[in-house]
Image (cartoon, rainbow, N blue to C red):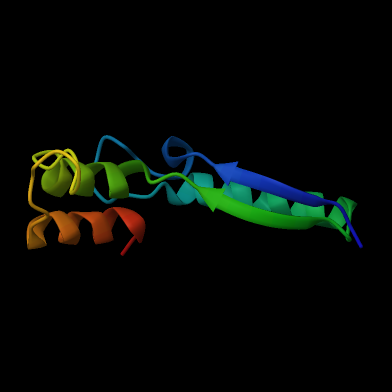
Length: 93
């Protein structure tokens, strides 16, 4: 069984934080090529990929969650807008 490596692709690396909901296709292609090269050099390498939220989660949080610091423990009621923002920041479109 090969080595397991967790590779986190930062949100700023693969997504353009200056534009809402915008990825960086050229960087995604570069990273995919580098991963392919690493797998070619070490065929039994096992990767677990993670990523940041970049322009996806940050804008959703700003739009939906900023008025709601916490749904519990601070006297604020968790509204449907809060849960909508929570869902958007937990899974990307």
